[in-house]
Amino acid sequence: AMYDKLRSFDGARKDLVLALAVGIMVGLVFRDQPNTQASSSTISAALFFGVIFNGMVTIALTIIKVPLSKLIMLREYGNGVYSLWAWYAGNMAANLFVQSIATFAFSIPYYYIINLRGSYWIVFVTLMLLAFIGQTYGFLLGVFSKSAQAAQSLLVPSIMPIMLFCGYLLQYKDVQPYFIEFWYLSFFRYAFTPLLVNEFSDGEFEPCGTSEYCPLGYNIDITTGLTTGEGTKRSAVITDQFDFSMKAKPDYLYILLGFLGGMQIIGYYGLKLMARKRNG
Image 1 (cartoon, rainbow, N blue to C red):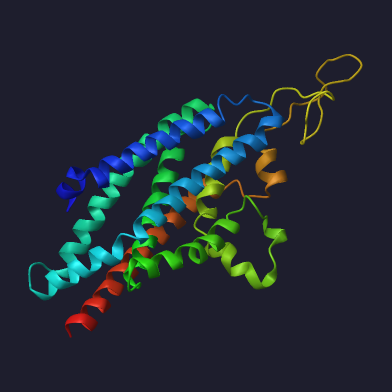
Image 2 (tube, rainbow, N blue to C red):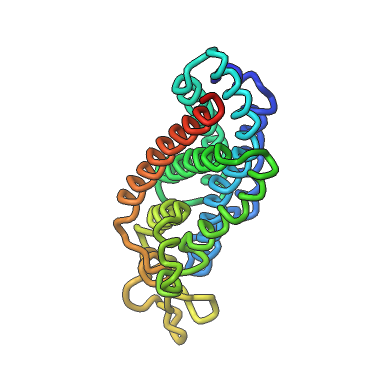
């Protein structure tokens, strides 16, 4: 499965070119962000877009491919060509291997052109885990879809709640009580939050005066032009603007791993259920 995936232009190489092109494009859109309060909202938007691309696009690309490949696999499985577990493990390993390279191709221009200041490896690992989950989630939805058209009809309703409650568009205090479960089930949020913490947890912003946009407060005296008091800590973006926990960087990565493992297990048993229904 891995060999066929790497040989296929419509598969691996196309995914890599797409990831690299989007990484460069996003980098150029948000190019060379300075260390100012005004740029914090722009950087947050760039982090949000990174989450959307690596999560939503992988779901969309996977969900429409699975119904067709599932039919072929079930037929060959019924003929005794290979075991279900071997196909599932090989297919997942191939897809995740290629996706890790695609995430690397996206993250290099994305990180360095934007001039992000957090750890590159946290950005890479977070986006890679999110992309892995996106592929597995897309596979899971595709397994239970009868056709590619049926899978496409699931795309928007399955993605919108995850995106809406990712922590960027709405804060926890703004979520209605009857939607609070979506807040905790959104794996986009478990990716966006550590990215934000990674970017803004250390250091201070450059001094900000009244002639500038200073959402976190002024620290330049308007009469003397001199810096007053302590500088504005970058962590204020995390705690004041988004009301996120500073512990999210390690904790939420473990939660992403839990999502990935859980979906992998559900995907396998879902496929096994389909095989039993088809072959008895």
